[in-house]
Amino acid sequence: MASLNLVAHNKGFSDREIEEILRVCAESYLKKVYDFCKQSHDYFALTLKNTSGPIKKLLNETRIKSHVAHLDSFTNIENYDRRFIRSETMKDVDETTRTDILDVKLFSKKKQIEEINFYVFTLGFSTLFKINS
Image 1 (cartoon, rainbow, N blue to C red):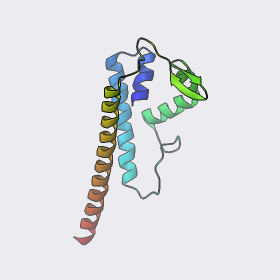
Image 2 (image 1 turned 180 degrees about the vertical axis):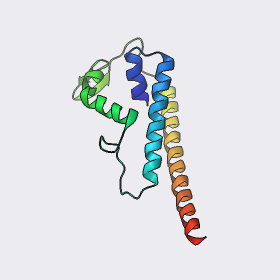
Image 3 (image 1 turned 120 degrees about the horizontal axis):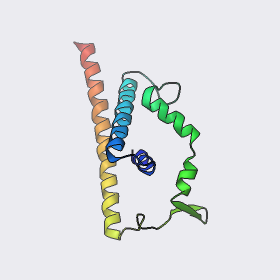
Image 4 (image 1 turned 180 degrees about the horizontal axis):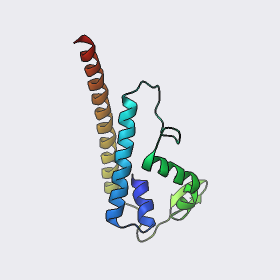
């Protein structure tokens, strides 16, 4: 979502338009994941063959556009590593802020895993309950 936000911002969309783009994409993605969870598959992938609407449009657009060109506009390569170009809007953060960001990211990842585990448990329980009733 952050990448979509960044691209939309760079393309000059207003905050309201960006919010709508992100909402539509998130809703479409969640609907697709929900549909997938109702089926029995070994893996999950959003492809041009199994998507429609805004997600399929987004997949098609990303095939056409180059991510490298976008990255090149705010990064450079030093010793084969891509680094952000420092500017008024792109600055290093102090160690305290960096630690806070990493803690939030770790907490968010743990929370996502807990929610997925709860959903899988609930889905399994409801399936078992339907079989036994």
